[in-house]
Image (cartoon, rainbow, N blue to C red; front, side, top):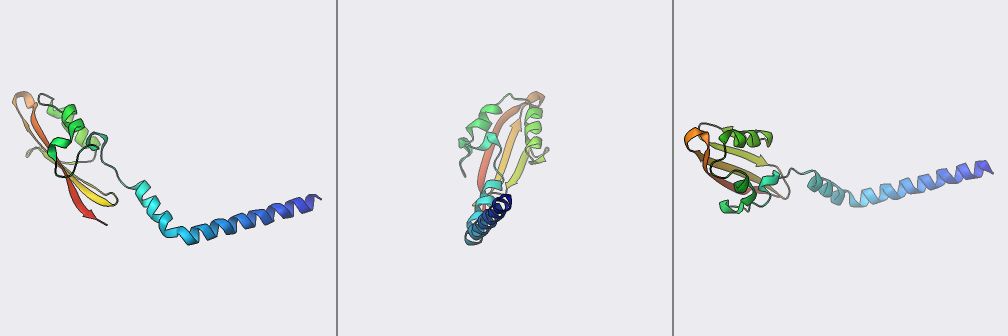
Length: 130
């Protein structure tokens, strides 16, 4: 009796494995694309509201770094979010490799006395789509 149960378990396991294999074989493109979307790079949280080619739309960023904010805070945020920073030109860039479109984020700012931010400009634009 125990031998029949073990035999049935193996049969069910083989049937389940074949069904899963058939599902993957029939849907591999959809599964691959879904995984690519799920694993795609995302913008930093302070830039989620930024619209392409609309600098004033990055309200979260502009609220976090208003005029009077110490420039060192911006440098810290840019560094922790993997931006390429040009300190002398006061700009930073980052390519976001995402799906369906890659994006380029360009941030420029000016400073006043004591290295505080005078103003900042954020531009997000398309950098190639599928």
